[in-house]
Length: 379
Ligand code: PMP
Ligand code: GLN
Image (cartoon, rainbow, N blue to C red):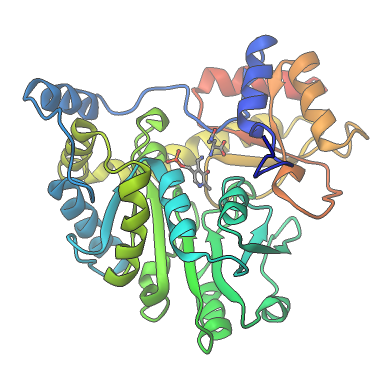
């Protein structure tokens, strides 16, 4: 059949993890921990299964989880969404992003995103008939040039997609960035999709800036998060979005026919976890900072130049001093010949991305990081 996505291949994450496995390389490519999530969460899942919570959850998510999300949002971002009308539980952040884009983007609508950008946004926009306008951000700061951003706006602009802490650059937005975004779009009828799946993995002294803390922006925003990152359980695939009631209603129209509802016992276990062990997410920056610092220190002896990491569990490394290969070829070589799998950055960009940067995931045990660093230092 004629493809609706003719240019699209298999995601880089699937490709690189497969290559890592085939060559028994240490896999620092696809972002997932090589350690388990909290024992408490696992026992709560078993508990709810044993209690018979095994039928369909409500379409919008189980009430205790929506309430716990509303409480957490209030505690962290100074704004309490209505748990009934403004919080929707989804099958990972991926579903929330897809449902939000599908609900909002009409044929011919323009969507602005910032490159490098996470790879699930563009196909969803394309399937909705939208037109993607990409603003390229430059390393090492990856800061938005707001004067240039303003030139991308038109009467067709429908949606802006941002991601903070940012995968793959590991930079974070500050309150001033949200203020600048608001200033740019206030006079236009534009929505904001804020991908905040790494909200609890932020090392910046001022902490994570959420779109939900901005009183005007949050009236037009869908904020997306995921428990996979927070609880080291990427395989559970439970995420959520927070948006004003009218926007949530539109997202739910898509969600109810995309997945209808999400794994019931996992939702109940996550509600217990959020309520009973809030210290887990509060301590997460320290937990990951220690891993980041250990890995950075080990790589100091290498010829890689390591870029600053303010958030996420990814580190960018510049390999200019080691190789002239383009980043895709370099990552293939690194996986097959050196035994360390990484992600090339150019795959997240529409324009040619001439920089020699790779992304390394440090959500790994110390032994894994040390073993990988030893191979990288030898180059
Ligand atoms: N957005 C970003 C920026 C991500 O890095 C990821 C996953 N790594 C997702 C969305 C998807 O999250 P989930 O696994 O919960 O679907
Ligand atoms: N988001 C994860 C990453 O950036 C991968 C998710 C996936 O494999 N689809 O590595």
